[in-house]
Image (cartoon, helix red, strand yellow):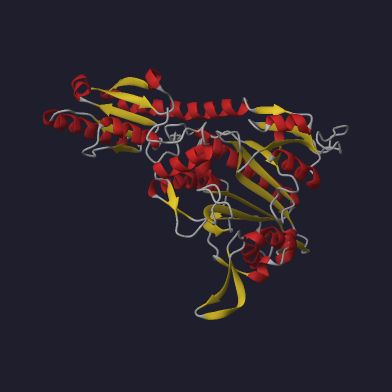
Length: 483
């Protein structure tokens, strides 16, 4: 049953999503169309995403830097496919300081060009390689159909950029990052993903190959949750990123780029949320446990609050992100619903009887009814809370994986694909051509999500024909409606 007037997901999924994002105070609309204000609770969730990824990047040798927001238009125009792909989305500054600029400046849509310019001066010798750089920044891509977190004109992200001596090293980096993204999505965000290669039409503008992690949302649609691009020597040639090898020969570098954006926050909402609001995995939840004290009389109030403060201090000392809800004038029921809306993984209820029994009531957000509740002694509260947080984390991942796997189906024809994508993803032999993908989109509104790596040990298998157009197939590809 929906709470606090939230539209049920089954009635209108898009409205449910927008209402939850706003009612849980993750974000709100900005005065500029297509932009959003990320509220503290939503930004704390993004900070958890950032922390989980940043740690993994640094463990694999990457270092953070920062590059300018404004990029000369001439830089964007140096790589033909890049400028063609981004032209419709560019925001361009033509005036500054009250004067017309000598050269228009593009507000950063991505940074391959300006970072390529820097790499050209930083890399001289093979001893300078590999060069492993990441930046946390905002970008602007003009968006005509905005959705909070999922598609906004300005959004937050990380973008990694690396340069290597060989194609093999660059490809290893591309796939290493893909594994990092998948590891974060599943271990931290509890979102199961499928790793795959993008088709030529879906790849990043200017890349030789693009790889992706694709996640299924609660309405069966796909979300591209992170991408890693093998750029080959396209940008190295455009920006003259060269090095002297061990034989003193001048060679062009091989480069990569990769990114995860604040749309991951939207993905967490849609992968786990229910009609009560958010359900956040404990690893990324801004608040892992909320304590709700319950009393009826002033005499009970002091005793209950004293016990609640002791439990709060105990859990905080153990490293749990805990919040004590001491708001006056609100009923316990209102507070329960409020914290359920915000997706806090664990609620701790403390009343006069609990104080007398030196116990508390624990309520898991990932379950309903009696299955969600249990009691625990305050003398062992740290271990019990830790165990339950671990259980909630694994439960959300398992629920999301079971939901996804139940809606993955194989198809051998366009008719079968059409039937499947209304409530799932269709895996079908696919040629990868633009004409074929456009025909599928026109017929079904589904797009090619990826050629999953685990189903394509080899490319261009002999004898396999496209299930749509009967051309020779590159391999098996997933098609789905997507954000």
